[in-house]
Length: 264
Image (cartoon, rainbow, N blue to C red; front, side, top):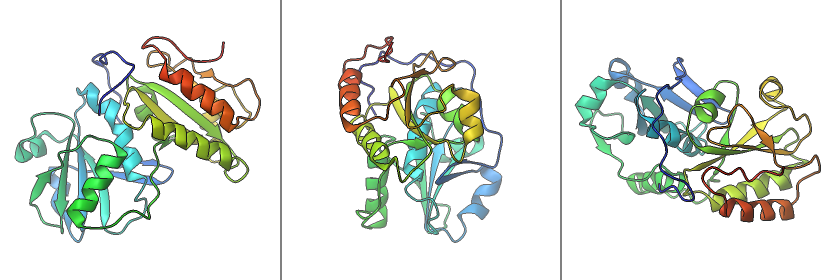
């Protein structure tokens, strides 16, 4: 996935990992696997996709959120599973020499194949459909990653990329804003220099309170790739409209690599 409007990303020296069996977004589940757990995990599963990762891979940090976005399409699917591994033994077994990589297994057997696609929602979805000869046209694709207290640091703080975050608390009343934000995210779906994310403040109010000063929703927050500890609110407290997002989208399209497009 090519980054536009952005100079090559710097190598990250320190990387924070989630040390749990799996990490969640509000509607996704990515399982952590290793060589010891792989055989058992594959049993009885139609399709298992694995994001091959490493603590020293800065590019993995940037692309992982987009993998999580793809997993959000299948939150409770009984046949399609998303996993991640840092296991060097599995990498050797699979012949992985470049990270990140996507490996998939079918029908619960140990035979694997490389998924030769960019790590984007559309490419992953389209390739799964081809492999399974299925029609996923009825599934809704989301181009924002849904945040919570378990995945925030890994998906937002660690990656060296810009973030545009929508904080909301009333999904029904604020649906128009949420839908419009999703449309803006769609326009940038091939640009990994900027990540679009959403946070449900009603569910994760403590996280909102800890990370952001704003209490009013909906709110759009900008975090530059080197400014994660200093988030800036785009709007001035009014309810955002389609026109607001259209103007902001135009400003984003002209943003320079080290210039925040936020309202001063």
